[in-house]
Picture 1 (cartoon, one colour):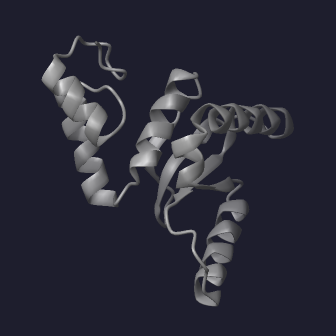
Picture 2 (picture 1 turned 135 degrees about the horizontal axis):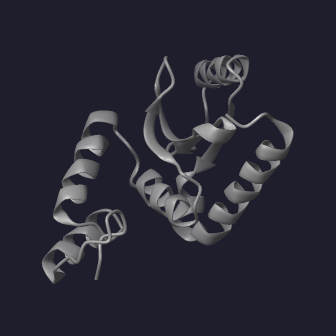
Length: 147
């Protein structure tokens, strides 16, 4: 068993704690770092799982990236892609819809594409989610100047 972040060998207790809490295999150091990020930013567990799945796929994601106005769950800066994980996907109020639209407008003005992914999609369809995001990255690479 090895940490998926640093490839350091981890013991059974650390493995169990990490996989039961976060759903990913992390050493004690990276487990503490991710716990701190979650606490400070209210990061969904699914964002952590998707972050590591994208990292494993070679996408170079950043977890909780600050865009100048707010923290983005996952960002892939080379293609200006922001990924937000929706945990509250019940009926949306008109105030929330306007706020989401304004946030999207600010992202587009700065050249970024923002996609919103319901957390259940990550929970049950991780492989398909990663493959679709990789396809989006390819499309953005082909259509915009890469930083």
